[in-house]
Length: 312
Ligand code: NAD
Ligand code: UD2
Image 1 (cartoon, rainbow, N blue to C red):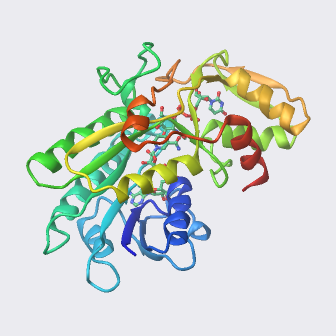
Image 2: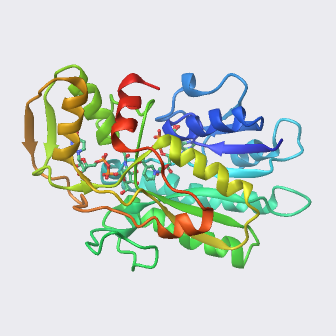
Image 3: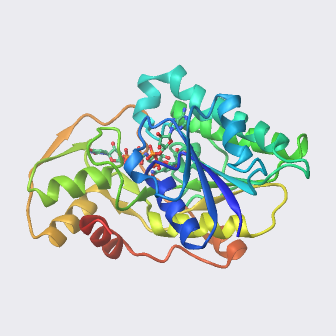
């Protein structure tokens, strides 16, 4: 049994990870400022520190654990996850998304008398920008378009510093578009599947930014947390980065068709201007993930969307 810290553990992906780690009989501490996360996402047996991931005192308190023994590893997921929000609140999202990560790495360096604790953290497919050489491999030149993508790339660069200069081992995952139950459908900043699934189920119109032919690699949250937990179990050194993706492409128009079929409804689409900085094609190559961790994303879109619609 280990004790892990999850930053952003009251959010969509973080709360699924907390459930999984607790089911595997680990102890869990969560650090979250509840900005997009919710208290009701916190599993009853997890310890919660309400605080800001860019505040060194809050991070140190969370990393100390409830017994002062210190945690065995950190899953760093706290971030402002919306590309759109990073355009509107540039400096504020930068503080959380980049300074928050450096704060976590620094606290991980100092966390234990026995040495630094390992960090598994969320990077993003947004670091590739509008690169059409799909499916994207990890060694493509990063060319992010958004402030969000630039900050995630900065996290990867600081992870190299964390290892080479500070001795903190890290594994970064470039999540593609993650979806599943518990993703907030009410915020305009939320993932497209959560918004479309709710609206199609209720027979309401959907808004498509642009022509709807933009393509995403949608990954089910259950696969994501399984792979995060697997990575932590491995003893790792260095500052490796992996795509966390399926390699399968789905356009928004296709997504809508599948949702309508599953719900047995037909909804009206309103096309609006494309979002500034929106990526046209985002499909990852999962080869490195497969060869390193001997696993793949296993949940197909139909199965994942059904689980999303039924909330399980
Ligand atoms: P989410 O918004 O549901 O979760 C983020 C959590 O971080 C929330 O609980 C929020 O309250 C917390 N948080 C935000 N700012 C904080 C701060 N300053 N201090 C402490 N806590 C703070 O988003 P998510 O989809 O679960 O994303 C989790 C991680 O995965 C993020 O790092 C995100 O950038 C990354 N990611 C997500 C996707 C996706 O498709 N959902 C894709 C790529 C990367
Ligand atoms: C997602 C993640 C982000 C990031 C990136 C990786 C979320 C909220 N964001 O950004 O964290 O890591 O993936 O590449 O999960 N759209 C509509 N109508 C809507 C909502 C969205 O047309 O009502 C479009 C949007 O313009 C975009 C696509 O759907 O073309 C996906 O948008 P998103 O916000 O779900 O995710 P993305 O890819 O911007």
